[in-house]
Length: 114
Image (cartoon, rainbow, N blue to C red; front, top):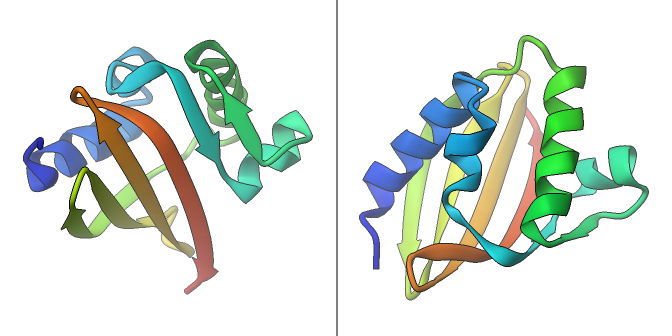
């Protein structure tokens, strides 16, 4: 298993730098990702495949030029981790990422108001 704390810090830094290539480097080609925010952009909360995920995130970044994540906490599990963070100072988010062979194969996002 990867070092959860190091992964989370690197992952957050990638988002804050808007470095889509760095973020996507953590994901498997056949990743399955689920987020209620995806439905706003793609029409479905479920995104399948790295290329579809890249397209979704590219569109999301274009809609949020001031995007900023603040790491709150990292939870490590067996083959997975959850990154809890604050998005743009207004929304708490938790992303649970499941890993196989060092890459994210499934991701689930949940949002809560501050």
